[in-house]
Length: 220
Figure 1 (tube, rainbow, N blue to C red):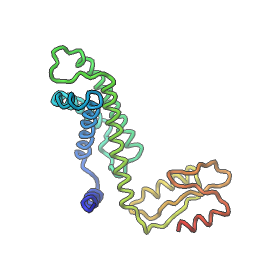
Figure 2 (tube, rainbow, N blue to C red):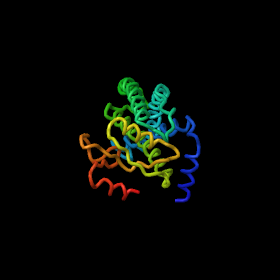
Figure 3 (cartoon, one colour):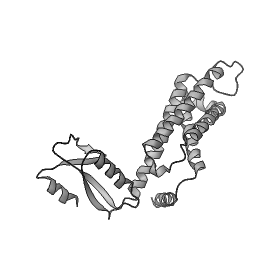
Figure 4 (cartoon, rainbow, N blue to C red):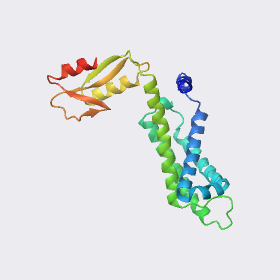
């Protein structure tokens, strides 16, 4: 795993990936997603036997994907700091690209002299864009999780936040986004009148009662 640690340290010590790297990774994800969907619907032999027209079709789709990436700036954010807004941009970009591709798929489908492109049906295109979007989300979430895990500061002061409403949640987000990490969020403390669930932002919520002091001591 030494090579993996070197790779992670090399990436996370950089300010960010260049824009073209993010676009390239997203394009590779889209292309591989298309091949995967082809394999699901048509199986391996048919996919390999038509790899050239399949690739041409997916490259045509990538043209519209890249236009949508440019419109919504899906590559502009730093991947290791990905947020809900970044995932939303990806979804909007893929939705717009799907709209363009869906419009052109009918001429391709009924093009009698077509020898260059694979005539796909709507269910195939929908599947390609769903898989692509999910994998692009996964890529960003995994990078963020790896970054948070690799650079979690064990020496940071362990902290409980008193409050489970907007103020407490905002403070928790600020603590989690601090780099380097000065505080480690261990849980939330709620008033008796606060409507709460067992967990908030993945951390346990504690009531103010006789067991609270004992719980805090065990987390030190």
